[in-house]
View 1 (spheres, rainbow, N blue to C red):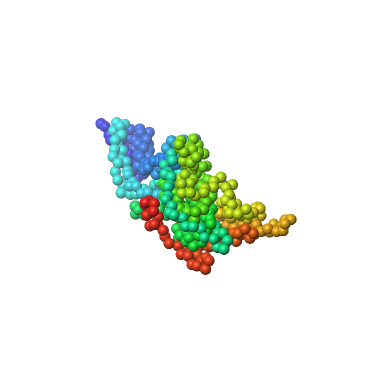
View 2: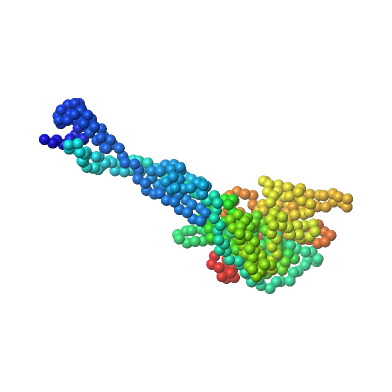
Length: 459
């Protein structure tokens, strides 16, 4: 006669006091068989299956990638192995590991052995077991980034007729426009994409009004006209910075053209942000560095700031070679973008004044500062001034690399100069789109609609 042996029944009788030997005699088998059936039943009834693997994903976009796991994988090393990530190709920028608890219904296995062959069923016990799940995610970038083909289009802005310069009883005037850092991030809300500018349109509007009011002899953009956010490896390039270079070029070129329409003599200095373009080309697309059309060898290089912004085509003088580029207003006054930065109010201007031999107007630090030293020589003494007029970008932390706590101030510079006189440097602070200068109140206006009309670009 064949007898069915139920593991659950054996365990219940054993807990009631019957020994393995007594159970063996009762079921007509050996003590070892009874012990094995009870042991296997206990293991099957009490052991939970491992957590399910809910997600394992590797995503690559150009020179950056992410890998993510949700489920059994607990460590970064395990994720790298599971996704077969080659660390000779990719470097880890950052990673995160999260753990949380999830509930699962508990089950009970009922195993029966007939002539040594196991059979049975799995039933819902009605209880909930709690088990852990892990999320592991890593952000990566290529150790040797692949060249990105240039898709940017050069800008060609038509400039309206130039107003004749007006002199003030022989006194010449220059307007200095510092660090607007034209650029954008993309804000996505409810499926709508909005370009959020790094540059401050109200401050720039005030600057244009001051240029129109003064009708100056020259206008000098002091560098960092463009931010060129995606042309640097200095910081992590957020997704909201992607594909915003073309609108940056369009608005930046349009703004320079506004000053060209008001003053025939306009110059632009290369800043460290413009220098990013040549550095990116040398690093990632060296074969295209300095290339020019075959029939225009005297023109600027195709992927140069001069060509992309259309400076030569609109008659604007572009001075490159940062940080050595200089624009001289007089024999004793020069403009540079600058690469000196010191912490604390007024400290940078002091350092610049101590290192220079002529009066120097500089940008880069986004602060309004002025320091003067006296140089004594055989023919008497001379004044050497170091002057920073501030910036024309937003100062609320939206500019990449900024935090909102920097000591930045918005403003423009005005220089009065005449042979035989020491130059006068005037800082015009701009705050919340308003400024007082020359006995007048200037209030900025958002020029976005005019920009769209002039450029036919949908910002």
